[in-house]
Length: 184
Length: 255
Image 1: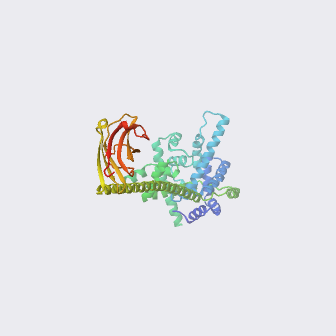
Image 2: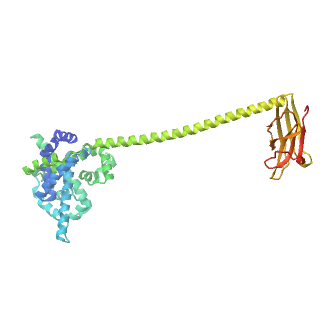
Image 3: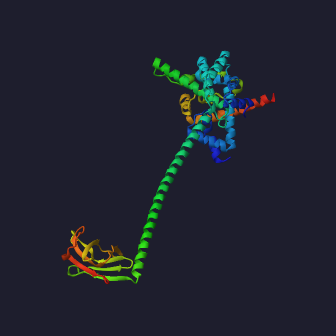
């Protein structure tokens, strides 16, 4: 369900009203910064990603179609793609400089996924690791399902089913959470 | 829930669409299902909410100084003019261009048709004039032939032109004369049959004689014409008749 704030921001974006950026920042910056950090594992780089993403969002606001995706979904994709591009660009640069044969774009990320698990906030803790690893790889690392299968060393079919079940589990977990928030 | 919807939801297309990793065709398929089936649309909404909540669970407070930096950066970036206006303007311009081109082509075709029709009309007018003249001529001939004052003369060739057959009509009151040549013996290419009018004992040159089939040909009428003589002359005709080559003669009555 779209919130009043989301609708208001979308209207401001459509009319090119600069107040949209301030509202976008105040409502989504922390979550988007978290996404950028999850992808880059580098706060400085994540800040660059966030800055670049906001410029892209502002410049391409006309491309946003509220009928196709919620505002956060679109913002998430912009930040995720910008972050992945940054990481790949940095990796290419490092590969050129070091020329190591075993350099792998996702190797460091996959390893770091396990470390990141401990940061998951309380309401997402209920999600089993096996699902979270898959969701993180697909959502935050920009891997395709085949790449996740190769990187996590699990069959492609299992990646698909864990993504589906994991998202279903999240629906249950967040459903309970929002029910509690509403009750309180 | 239909089988196709179940099958769609069982596939991972919706999840991949959520992550923006679908091909354009897959995106179209996903959008089709979302638009058509409420249960798919509801699942898609829930997936998006989960993504937002899941991402929010990783939220990290952004350093204070970044807000001002980002606001400054975006404000210094010129906002693209609403492309919808530009696109609309382009489409309208293209549409006008296409319509103008169509009207121009249509106009050219109409002008061409008009030229063609005009020529056709001109030709028809010429035909009408020509037919009217022909009708007038035929009427005149008819009047002459039916006139009691018209004399009919049958012309036959002599030994040198036995197959020559012609009929002459002379109306002295109207001062008109016609000839109808039915057959003419063939001559070498360098020779022709020429008509002469005998006036006061002198042969006055008339036309070259040709087969006229079913048509009457008017020949110049000469006052005091005593006869019409036909001779064989060199090609192009002569100014003076070659009496030795005379092949037929018609002597007129009352002259």
